[in-house]
Length: 231
Image 1 (spheres, one colour):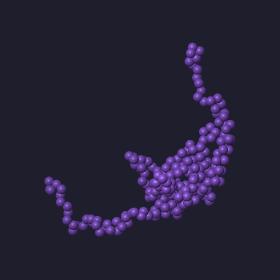
Image 2 (tube, helix red, strand yellow):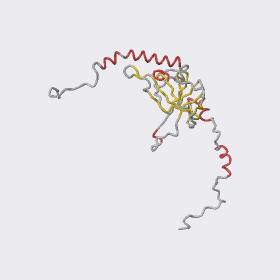
Image 3 (cartoon, helix red, strand yellow):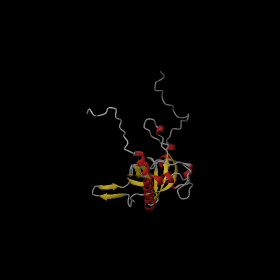
Image 4 (cartoon, helix red, strand yellow):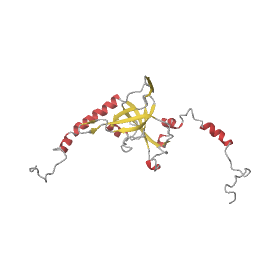
């Protein structure tokens, strides 16, 4: 213990750490290109709909009941193609609504900058978009709508912890009556959000009948008694 130098300063970084990072940059770029090509050639086409979410709308619960679907762009993704919506097993009925969708991070970064979609739109129209919870996905393969409930950017790491893949954990989209922006006024999401009926809803019948029972406040009606009896 007497030979230990108390003034010794250690370096937390490995030797030549930054030099190795620079040397591996080409390998990272190559692997990233291979991952992107694999998803684009073997995946399925999907549409990504960006949404707004302002937690300051409700200071107590952090909720936003005025969410808006802003725009969409087309991208390629990989997921286990769902052939059925539910499965019957010895444990009863198992829902298949929740599953993972994978796509290349570089591909999303490029596709999100297009004005309409990656095939007919104009590039560099928007800034690079980072996927977030609450966004909406539409699968062209099975014409199903999904909502992202969790985004994982650590799904795949290779060569000095470089991330290449987005992992979206999704569920079936519920009708949340979100506002549709003018840019999507003629899109199929308008029908999905505003026209899909609820078979158990009775609001339409109630609206038709309630006018006969609502108090109109006319002068001919007897006014209520004073709760303080003239005090």
